[in-house]
Amino acid sequence: MKKSKIKNQKKFHLSDILSVTTATLVSTNKMRGLYEILNFIKNENLFSHQISDAIRECKKVILKQHPSLSKIESECLNSVNYKDWLDKQISEFGNELTVTSL
Image 1 (cartoon, helix red, strand yellow):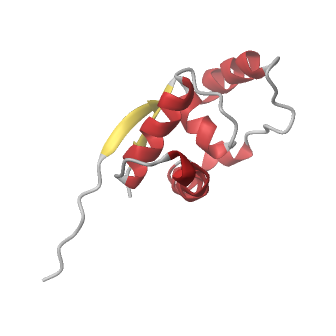
Image 2 (cartoon, one colour):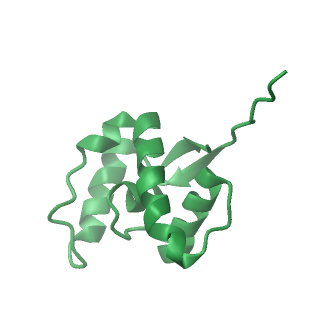
């Protein structure tokens, strides 16, 4: 009999989620927020050299769970406008979304 892996769910601030899906650090918790969501999704404690690969993998997971996030435009995102950009995304998608681990 095959054991099924129990998947966990947790709410994350949209800024943490978008830091993964846009590959741009917009998390209000900075790197701590990014590590928290990546560690949760992968059920690991990642090291800094693993972050890039984890972002690529976790982006697919998040967009599968929340496909509407794929329409977010982030090409013009920069250090000057990111707060206004984030506020706009929060007004459209909400402050938090539930993410399921792998």
